[in-house]
Length: 347
Ligand code: PEP
Ligand code: MN
Image (cartoon, rainbow, N blue to C red; front, side):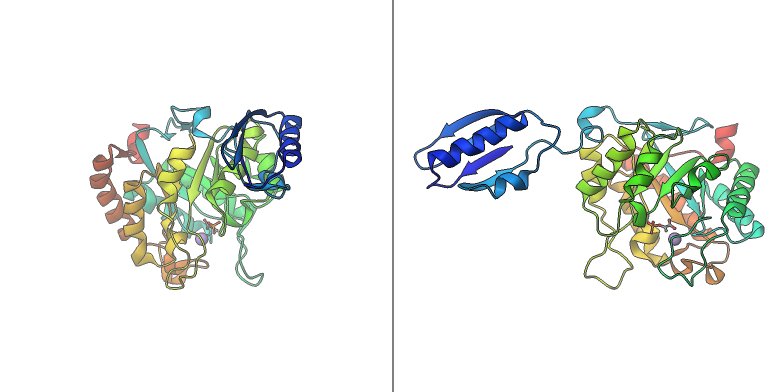
C-alpha cells in the first residue's frame, strides 16, 4: 500500500498513519520530500481496507498495490490451470472447447435432439438448465431432477459432457451423479455460501460474471471456491449491464484478455447472454476466441421459435455447425485449435 500525505500534514498525523500500518503488519518505508511525505507499506496483511487510510487525518491518497485475491492471481500458478474432465478433455490448454445446448431442458425429445445436433456440430459439452433463475416467478422454472436425468441420458448417448446450473446449496448433492460441471449463473456470482460449498466438491465449476460485477469482484468470488480447495474452476464472461439497450447486455470482450492476464484460471465467453440476439452471437463468439477465450458457452435449440426460455438468442442447429467450422479456421491465428468433436475423443 502507498499512502501519500497532504502537503500540510502534521508530524502527529504522519506518526498516526505509520503506527496503524505497523499495527496491521506492514513494513513501512518513509520518504520525505520538500513538501510531501510518502509512506510505502510493504507486506500483505491478511485484512486491511485501503479506505480506512484514505479517510485518516492528513492523508491525500492511499492506494492498494497488492491484489486482494491470492489464490486466483496469475502469480499463484503462472503456467495456468488446466481442468481435466473424465473423458480426458482438458480446458485451459491449447484446445478451445465448445459448450452448447438449449437454455432449458424442456423434454426428452428436445434435449436428445439438441445433444445430437451439438455433437454433430463438433461441440464437447451439452448445456441446458434444469434449475432456472428466471427474472419473473411466472416464467418456466425448469424441470428439476427430471431435467438432470434427461441431460445425462442425452449426453451419454452422444459422448458429450454435461454442464448445468446450480442455484442453491441443497441442489449440489442431487446434481453430483448427473453432471460433469457445475455452472454458477450471473445472479449467483455473489452467493457466497453457495461458492464456499462448491469449494468443497470435487467436480469442476464454471463461474459466470455477475450482471454488474467488476473483474475484481469476479476474482474475489473465484477466491471463495479456490480457498475451499476446488481448483477445477473456470470463469465466464457473459455480458454486463450498461446504458446500451440494443443488446440484452454488453459483451465485455476486453474482460477475456484482462482475466487471462490477472488469473491462471481458464476463461470462457458466453456470447448468447452477452448480446441476446442470435444473429450477433457468431461474431461475438469469433471475437471471444480471437481475444483468447479457452471455450464458448452458447445457446442452441432444435426449434428456437418454440423455446421455453431465451429463444431469441438461441442459434439454429445449422448456425452452430457453420460457426464451429469458422472457429476452426480462426483458432490457428491465435495459436489455438478447436477441441475435436466427441466421436474423435472416444476413438
Ligand atoms: C444460462 O446460462 O442460461 C443463464 C441463466 O446464464 P446467466 O447466469 O449468465 O444469465
Ligand atoms: Mn439462458
